[in-house]
Length: 432
Image 1 (spheres, rainbow, N blue to C red):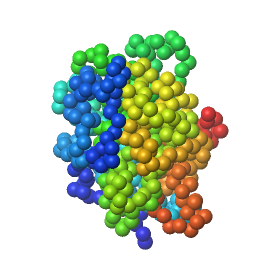
Image 2: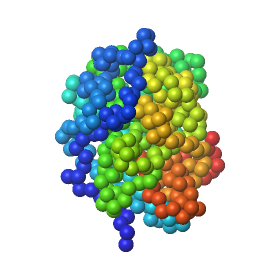
Image 3: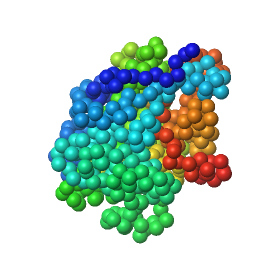
Image 4: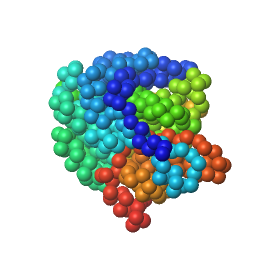
């Protein structure tokens, strides 16, 4: 019988993060100071980030050691399992082999803990007493609340308003771990009050929530800001996913033809894909890398590749990325973690250079795939991760037509246990 669950021993867990910037053919475009349009200095970031994080953000080192204190917490769920989706393959009648990396086994239920633990650790080492952040669907807010709990740091979460009311148990989870959660836009910041006055019925957006969190951090000397996606150091921390996946596939003597991840800011896609992009850059293999996004917020498929703000209030540096415009407020789809107007500069550069391709889907075919997956593999996926499942199924069905026995790998970036209301709306045909 072919292996279904591929497990690594704790001793096989990656001890370093991989920095793709060291292998790119040309440097990534630097963040710019919006006042001067000159590259921003590391010192300018110190009001919102600890120095160690800034150093990682600017680093060109190929590998960066993971601190033992971070590895100790990682061991609660890492290495995460890799599964062969035998039952889904049988249901689809495809010759393709489908594998998925299950990041939903982390305590917070998603891949986000890979960076939240690291960021909270570096903040603790530099004496940060309080961290502010935004969250879309609540996965990131949950992960950072957990991490701050472990390192005895206060956590303030600005949760995008539509998701705050769609996913009330995410708020409960954050509260259990000590997080203070408010819907964004909120009356707690000057920018939040401005938006509420101008747009009292707004569903909110990640751009607005980022603005509130940054404003809060800058206003308090004991506070730093933490971001769950997009930036280089976040992408760096997520590379443990791909490093483990490669080792696990080596156990069954295979290598992926296609690597798939959903894409909002880009962190989980980068986590699963960068190890394989490294091989592609070196000419060792040529796996297709596919970013999957919602058609309600199609940054890579329809956005412009240019400098833009990471937030709505124009408080962040300018980043070179695919963007729909920092004022864009996407429809209130249930994949709240993918409702971001821009993308990681690293993912954007790789996409612009043809190393990553992108597709987009509407909500209903995504939920069709999620239900197929849940009924075959037994795991209820988050709406965000379900975008990757939709693409994996479509690629497997293409193999059914051509007879090709391709190996497909996708990142199941989180479970959907707190997304039951979205599944109810799907079955009742009430999704936007």
